[in-house]
Length: 182
Image 1: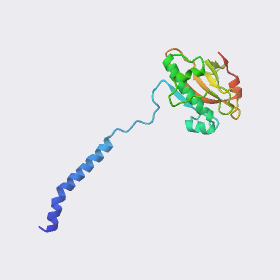
Image 2: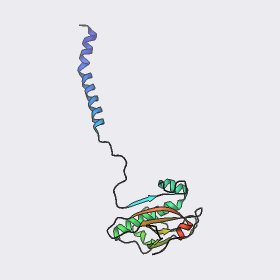
Image 3: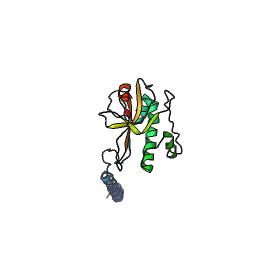
Image 4: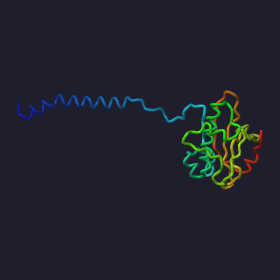
């Protein structure tokens, strides 16, 4: 037996053990559960932001895209989150928007004025309704100061015990004007 083969044989058990450990590690990695396809969480409180400003009116956009198109959308998105929290705690909408300060995060400063017009947002706890439309406007811009549109927070009519969902949407002036107090 040559000197070379005896040295090689001496390391053979270690090499096979290392190969076995590597194979085991690869097997363990491939056996890990992979997350299911990205599905939205099944939670009764949902906030969606959509925009027709940047193209398709029914295409959902991210909060960042909405903010890039109009910072008013971000303010309304923050307000809609506070509305949902208030509703979850009190089982009713607040009497006025300022009541939402009781549920805002410590590091959050809710603002109830439009950044474009400087005017306070309109608010109707019962919602504004329109014939043939299933959703109610809860919060809205006071004027169409965003290239002829008004950003609004809309909600479906909610019966006691049902989940609430809110959407931040831009509405054209003719569509907005079709809504009236309930």
